Length: 349
Image 1 (tube, helix red, strand yellow):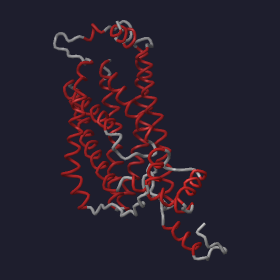
Image 2: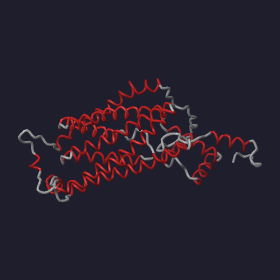
Image 3: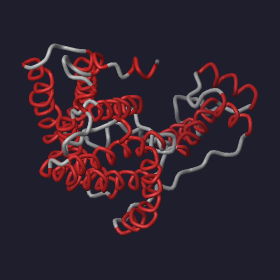
Image 4: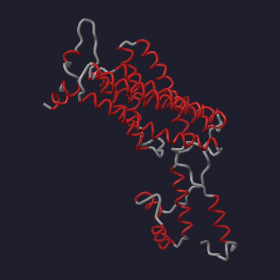
């Protein structure tokens, strides 16, 4: 009964269309939900392919480009602080720092410095970021060409494999989310992946394949440039990175904020009403597209912020990245006060 209710014709299809009208007949082949069962094994296959790619291609490429991890000063072994770090908070409040100081007999600056060093230990290295960006660049580059071929071919078989590959890739990103680099837009990325999978699944089952293919292609085009800019950034090719980033920003604004809403969403929002009355599937599909559009606006604000820094010469990297905390200034500050050169204070505080 639950299956019958979920696949109710009036829920997903406009009147007078029914699921019976989408059955294979007289050489016409239609999309079915059962076609998507292969996504899970393909996602696992992509995870294995990614591991091989990173080991056999990404690592040698990083070494050839001179990508090296920064040598970080490790926090001293302290069971009490380590337990607090793992079970309570990585960013203790001032009151908590004072409480820890009483137990250890340390100064507040010593405790704060330990937490900074410990947080830096957990931050991913440049090589890990490079491998992740390299894998995504390779996938988006291949999927962009695949999307163009699928649109040109316009056969169900080619579009089917384009759908399966894209959905499996986003499924693999959900599987690897715990191990991948966490950025400031981590939650937005999760929403994006789930919205994309939901949108593509529905568009396939309801036979909205043409528009689904266009949506994927519009997204992949700018992602290729984004990941390549990251790779150049991690390799220290500042001029090349900035040039690619400018091109990426232009392509992103055109594809995500102009073509996507004013061409694609316009087609799905306006043209269906010329032939059918509004129905739940119509609102659901457009709602998912609007979720993606809102995410595009959010990321566009980050890009514009980076463009502003670029124009004023302050662009240091990805605006979404959680930057490593600097310890040099703190050490100099503490050293000065320990030696009595800080307004007469000589106790390290």
